[in-house]
Amino acid sequence: MDVHLIDGTYELFRHFYAVPSTRDKDGHEVGAVKGVLRSVLGMIQGGATHVAVATDQIIESFRNDLWPGYKTGQGIDPNLWAQFPLLEEVLMAAGITVWPMVEFEADDALAAGAQTAARDERVDRVFICTPDKDLAQCVRGTRVVQLNRRTREIRDEAGVMAKFGVMPESIPDYLALVGDSADGYPGLPGWGAKSTAAVLAKFGHLEAIPADGRSWGVNIANSGTLSRVLTEQREQALLFRTLARLRTDIALFDDIDELLWRGNRPAFEALAARLDGAVTEPKL
Image: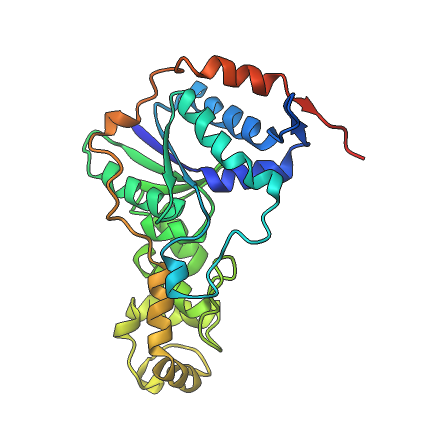
């Protein structure tokens, strides 16, 4: 069997900015929820059997306590923000497993869910449905892969290496050095994608990088400068890696069959009617 784990937060954002404004009879924006629901049910109609959707009930997480610049919910369009609870309600009514995160992030749930699912010998492949580079750290061979549902690109371990120049297990170290503007931490000065990939492809993790850049034996011109920056800001780099490293110690389910879609629940009919009755507003 295949398991599909979906980044509901990403999907809601994607649909909010891709579909026309659509409001229900009470004037509430529901277009993004309607789009995500249609998309997920389309996956099931296409043959997906074991499906779960992870969402962020709040954008903030334990990482905000570690780094003050970490991403927050500030600036999110109120019409988008208001659709998060409805998305969870609609998906659960549709019989789809939903993991709403509070202390952790949706990405953590996807990482933990993928690891748990991969332990089951009945599982052939786990598809982590998001293009988010953080989730590249969860890829394992060709069995646990990323799926970009918009482009239909599947990224396995070889694909991660081709994209970032490092193995999946080095992705947190990679992000610690180059930074992640989407999550709000800057990385270390001077450490770009190419130099970071060259060093980590050889040493794997921050702790294994020698203090003296002249001993690295990699083809980068500024190894001395980079090694000095890393020495001076090592604690910062380790903190950024903690921010980048996804948590897999979250108990989400005990048996893979808990993710099996068994059909809609009684509440779904009324919610579907609410969405079907929504009116799409013409673009000005």
